[in-house]
Structures are given as C-alpha cells and as structure tokens.
Amino acid sequence: TSPSVYLARLFGARAVMMAVLLARTPEEVRRQQLQLAVAVDLVDAWSAAAAGRAHQLSPHATRRAVTAALLEAGLGAAMLRRSQPVHA
Figure (cartoon, rainbow, N blue to C red):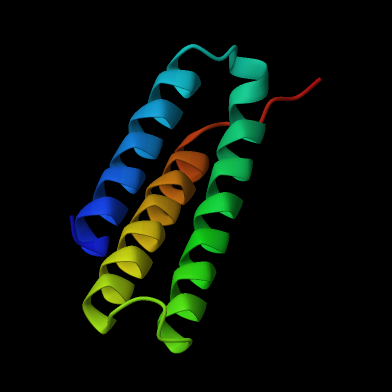
C-alpha cells in the first residue's frame, strides 16, 4: 500500500468519525468541537507539509495530504460560519 492510499484512508476514517461525533453531540458543545477539529486539520496540513519538505513523503503524497487536511479544515470552517454561537 502506497503512502497516498494510507493517507486517504486515514483522512477518510477521521472525517467519518468526526461527522458521527458531531451528529451525536449536544448543540451547546458542537461549536467548540468544530473549532477543535479545524485546529487539528490545520496542524495535519502543517505536519504533512513538513514531512514533504523533509522528504519523508513523496511530493504526490504531500500534495494529497495537505490538500485533504485543508479541505477538511475548510469544511469545518464553513460549518462554523453557518452555525450560531451558543449564548449562555
């Protein structure tokens, strides 16, 4: 299995898990979980880029990993923009 396939499965599994968790989360904590998920996705993008610069991933695998992480972060950010902040 190539690193690209492994990375695709990793991001896919994480995306499904986060979607299930968010769907089952009470409204009052969902926004905080989305914020944390976006932060994790941005760290993933940075980590993949760093691995590519260090030649630990091929250029192709690096592009796929960075793209997947940024896509996930973008989707999470879009969900945050659409959601209303919880007021206590």
